[in-house]
Structure formats: structure tokens, C-alpha cells
Length: 104
Image 1 (cartoon, rainbow, N blue to C red):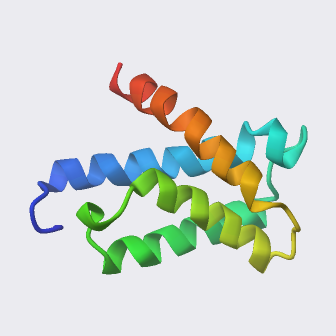
Image 2: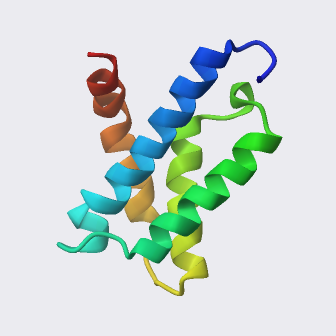
């Protein structure tokens, strides 16, 4: 349990982050064309996210930004050349609507 957060809130943040990774990898035509990110990118992104999430408290960072960065790093690891600006744009354009959708 992260200090300051209940176990249920921690799980909620993890699920939101994983959902945001999924959204970015599978529904972001602006970044990955019509096919979505390769499964290797998705797997690497999830692994990076969970490694960081276990070591750093959620109160220390924006978990949606971390999810976005994990996908970007996964692309770099999998040798997929994409510019950072498209990830940055996706984060700012989708974060608010994703939160609203999750809360309803």
C-alpha cells in the first residue's frame, strides 16, 4: 500500500494507468496508424509501468504521464521510431476525457 492512499484507491489508479496504456496503444491512429502498437510494445510498456509503480509513490507523479512515457520508452526499446511530440499531444488531448469516462 502506498503511504497516504488506500489500497482501493491505489488499485483504481493502477487500473486507470493500465487502461490509458491500452488506449494509447490501440486507439491512437495519430501515433500508430490503423493497426495499433505491436504487442511487444504493449507488453514492454506494462512492464515498465509496473516496475516504476512499485518503487515510486503515486503521489510523486502523474500516473497518466507515466503511462504515456512507458509507451514511448517501449517504442524506443522495440526500435520503433516515433517522435515524442505525438505522445505529448495524445496525453494532453486525452487525459481529461479518459478521467471523465472512467468516473462515469
